[in-house]
Length: 202
Image (tube, rainbow, N blue to C red; front, side, top):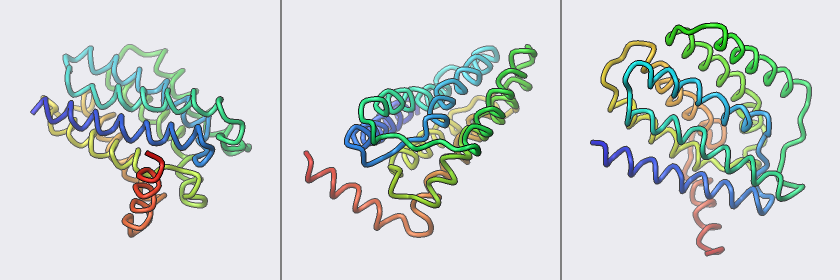
């Protein structure tokens, strides 16, 4: 089953690289607050997971942070490849950092995961809103593949106590919502558009 997780993690990375490519070309405009916090927050969940003995099931969480790291770097390459931030974005970022700060004050794995989930949720809200209102500014395939990879990670969990499963289950749910915010009810037209554009550029 581990090989399935490695395969889906590779697919997720490919999806993230599509987002990186679109960002470099200025077609996708990532919200830098969301992506910065998406780099930071998974580290909390990984630390908590390691403390309770999880191993391979943490790979999807690592990928949750690694892909946004690449996308965040790409957003500084093209001046058109970032989303203009407003008060709502900064408020969400502040709440996310506050949740991370609360994690620093506790050594309890379950509390760490709870604050990590809150931090990641607040980090995701600006992109959820942006994806719903301006789906053309996002690359949905990366979230769809992240959803797939995290789902496989859940299937590999050794136990389902909150400390070692909470963040990964949340990752499944939030990536579903992110993909849904972009694709809405019918994902096929936008997916076809994304793949068609990729084929033309290869």
